[in-house]
Amino acid sequence: MKTWKWIRSFGIRALLFMVFNTMLTGVPIPLWSIEYLDHPQKLHSVTRTHLVLEDGQQVTLPYIKELPENSSLFMAALSNGVETSPDGTAWGLIWSDRLCGNDFVVWRRRRVDLCLLAATLHPEGIDATLVSPDDMAFILETCRINTNSNGVSHRRNRLAGYDWIYMRRVEKVFQETHAKIEVRPGKAEEEAAKRPPG
Image (cartoon, rainbow, N blue to C red; front, side, top):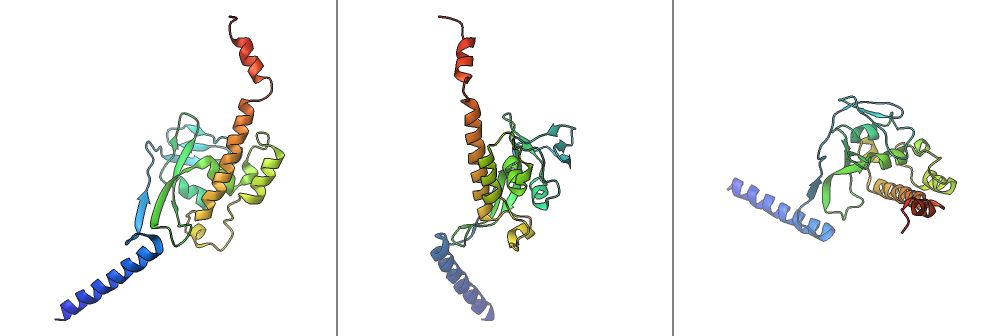
């Protein structure tokens, strides 16, 4: 009889939890989202300017002249290895907390562009010769991940939800910078001059 009472009590509690979670997030149970690296390479070490892989390959990050080598958050993103893409992008993996309680995904591990992570953790490490002074000031003022705050996420070497907002801002700046380089004055004339006549 006691067993049935326990089962009944557990069932009621579980049902109430599912109802509450549905009202809060739209789904009855917490969900998870786990991303992976396709072809990770083990990391050997991190220097001031390079990621050194186990096979000896030295990887630099676009727009970054100085890495946040002393950041535990950056090192956490490297703990599962590094994936490099043909376009020069380097990827890591990091756990991320929810932006708010209404997010139905409770456990989330995401791929992270290490260039954007480095830029937001250590904006001073961005190569200022590639970014306009106004854009650099914008990043310094509004896109820094403050790991010295009392946030629980950073103490657990996780990204907070709003950290991804900072990285998206930096990504937009870098994309606009790249576009300006692509359409710099005189480039169209240079390309036209290279084409054969007729």
